[in-house]
Length: 468
Ligand SMILES: Cc1ncc(COP(=O)(O)O)c(C=O)c1O
Image (cartoon, rainbow, N blue to C red; front, side, top):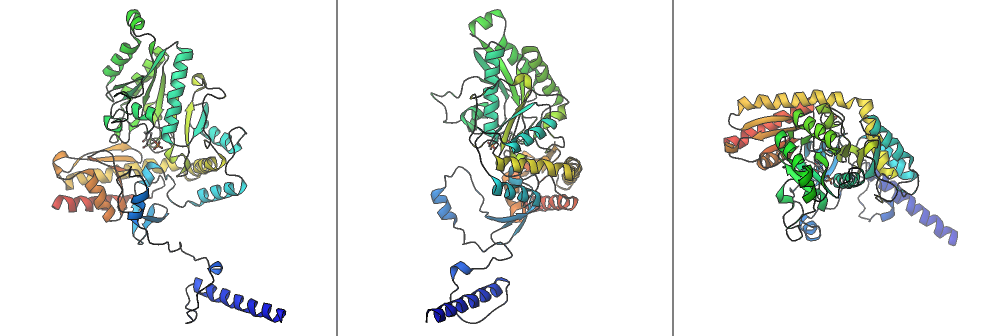
């Protein structure tokens, strides 16, 4: 009797499996309304139908720190994203200059899945070979000698700020180390990095008695005279040093091109003046390469555009191609950290570094820098050609490589956010950089045809908006 029952159960199970297998490849099987056994659901070839997304439920539990567009991304492939309704978007935002290899790059998938199988996280108390490999790549591609790994741009800048303070205190005899940054800059959202950020809107109501973190001063970007004056004011002569009780310039920290601040490149004159001032005072020149680094500008690092070397630079965003990782890299002469001085649990773990190494390897294989330069020129030329078609709409097209900004005329009747929304409606993603600049930061592997599509879509959006 028991044998008979077992045979019957096996038969039922195999029939159900067959039926579900057939359904899985899309052939209508049988009309029986029998409910499938949940453990036997077959794997579909396309991404699984997900339960309908409920924005109201999301907004109830997730903090509203972002003004979100009503877009739910389902999946991505190359330079395209697809929403939950199947609509296709040309992605010229790339997770804000992050998905440098586009979406679902096979090399990145392979590296991350293989690493996940081996070991995804171990403490920095032990050697992590993947971290050493990535540090070597960062060192080989830049003027730095060493890297410290963390998880984001803000953290990388925090590390740089701490390094600059310790360097000034231990090597320059400063008691009150001051870091000079630029107005309109952006360096992150931690307390020290919003203080470094020269934009009051990011600091509002985060102070203590109206004060942010001490030890930061600001100068207008690209104003050489103001920079020289500020250094002289802080370091001063004998009496000013006496009264300022050890105030000393510890670092000048700047983006090689301001990203969030409106895609504004630094002038080489400004960056070189900063280098000379640092050489003369012993302060560190620190480049925030979080947005400009990893080939985005057409050089591996943005500071290279200015033909100088820096003492410290920071990177994140594109370093892992979308897998969270950041790094602060410095010259040996600026390396004042020893065991226990700085740390991060996740920083440079095997998984994140496997992603970073895969990205770096793909850059070499695909000669990504050449593509960035060619496609960047094509994009700027195409956008500039639209200036004549829409007079009074585009004020300027600027940028380097594949970080390009299109500034709208004040009187054109619409803002950057309106263009971004119209583009999204028409199947393309971009990001505003301030109220008047539409930012293009596509994957660095974007093709010639895709850049043409971006230019056409942008022109079509301007046509609709300027006809209103
Ligand atoms: C120049 C720059 N620095 C720092 C940051 C902060 O990076 P994260 O958001 O990874 O902390 C950003 C982010 O946009 C940035 O553009």
